[in-house]
Amino acid sequence: MTFDFPVADRYRGLATSPVKEIFALAARPDVVSFAGGIPDPALFDLDAVRRCYDWVLTHQGQRALQYGVTEGEAEMREQAAARMSRFLPTSADQVQITSGSQEGLFIAAQALLNEGDVILVESPTYLAAVQAFAAHGARIIGVPCDDHGVLPDALEAAIGEHSPAALYLIPSFQNPTGRTMPMSRREQVGEIVLRHRLALIEDDPYGDLRFSGEALAPIASLPGLSKQTLLMNSMSKLMSPGVRIGWTRAEGPIGQTLAVAKSAISMQSSVVDQLTVARYLETEDLEGHVAQVIDVYRHRRDAMADALSGRLPDSAHITYPEGGMFLWASLGSGINAQDMLADACDAGVAYLPGWSFFAQDPDFSTLRLSFVTHSPDVIAESMDRLVGVIDRTLEQ
Ligand code: PMP
Image (tube, rainbow, N blue to C red; front, side, top):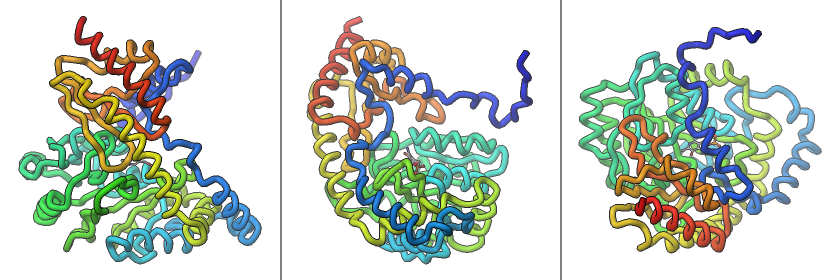
């Protein structure tokens, strides 16, 4: 007989991730999967990372294997602050090191949200952020967006209607849509956030993966906004998701609250990994590495966009992201991308149906395709198959 643990209310109904079965389907050996946002492991800067682990274990071995500082190791906080200071002056003591920005999101939810509070999010938005907020009993309300991100009028209306505790945004190369909020929209949204004295969680793991055009400053860097924004970066998409190093920038007393939450959750992030990432940033060539990654990803984005362009139904709309990892398609025409997935897998191609990224009113005709994992040839062939599946679905 099994024992029934009295599972907390906040985790009832969250018992499984809505995308777990989809990933299981996509993992079939005969299927080329575009479902996960998985960096191409062939591009990892393995020799340089090995050099840094070796150096840390040789020169700082005892410290690296010991407990560390909750806020993060000094070297890592310095490096994180230097990266953020490209857009927004940041001191090391404003940085909380986290185990990926996913933990940053969980910590932010711990620090900011009471049971029943409303948090506004883009519609659609990053699923695991919604899960982190929902696990704290928050009510998640999606705000309508266009190709430039959240709509200012809709944001005003949602603030008026729901009196939210916070707003969560991914302004650059958003997950799942790949879209980017231009500077003018950042300014409009920033003005609203400022006027309503709303806490902003600004999640920016993809901003440095820009294939073309000018880098855009985060909303947090606009006048007045740094004090009411938790700005998050991560090494996951630039160096390695496996090292689990990210950070959150905060000003004032909220930083101490984040540290209390971090201490309760995990004491501190791995010291050996922090020292190694700091060493990498100090002595290796991250910019050169990222430039190589960007070059490869740009070709893959083009291979995917070219293979789909002009071949989807007239009702379809696809994004053409200037960076990041994802392309988003709304197929329209009454197609249900969730229902179509089994046929797509039988044809050897998998994607992530888009419905799970909506807090409310899911658009079932949407799907997310990650273009970073496979070579241009494999992408082109797989997109041919996907177009065939869509055509057959429309004929039925
Ligand atoms: N935020 C967004 C928008 C993401 O897409 C991801 C990764 N999929 C994360 C946060 C978490 O990334 P990590 O914890 O690896 O830094």
